[in-house]
Amino acid sequence: FALPPVDATLAERMLARIPGSKLLAGGRGRAPVDRAAVIEAIVAFSQLAFGLSPYVAEIDVNPLLAGPRGVVAVDALIVSRAGATASAAASTSRATRLCITRGCQAFSGCTDRARQPPLCKARCAALDR
Image (cartoon, rainbow, N blue to C red; front, side):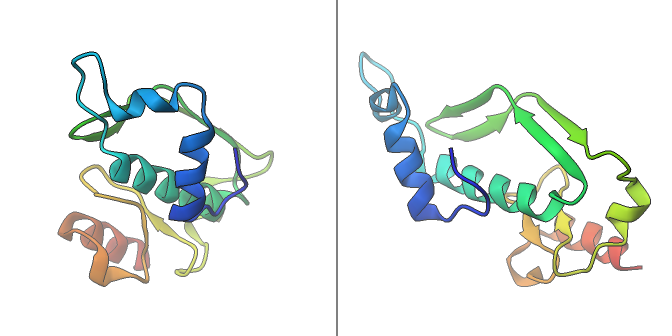
């Protein structure tokens, strides 16, 4: 566990510390998981949590499935902070707002448009209106 935001180096250390971390390397006929995708998911999730921290009390992603072709969050629960509203979250500065859309490869700050897939660019542009 670590407080957000987490960088790739810390995410790698976190993976090494979890019980069963050797299972991520494969074995017994199983292919190794895509460690880079797991690390990217941890980093992106920590950025999301950090950016939404004024509005979100807790986020639980369970399970997070990792395999040789990437990572999938199957289910998530988000608990808002007392008094937080959608309109308050929508009015956050562009620097802290995050693009969270289906089809995104990662969560990116809306100010970092060069790294976003087209769908994310379109969604973030809509947020700026």
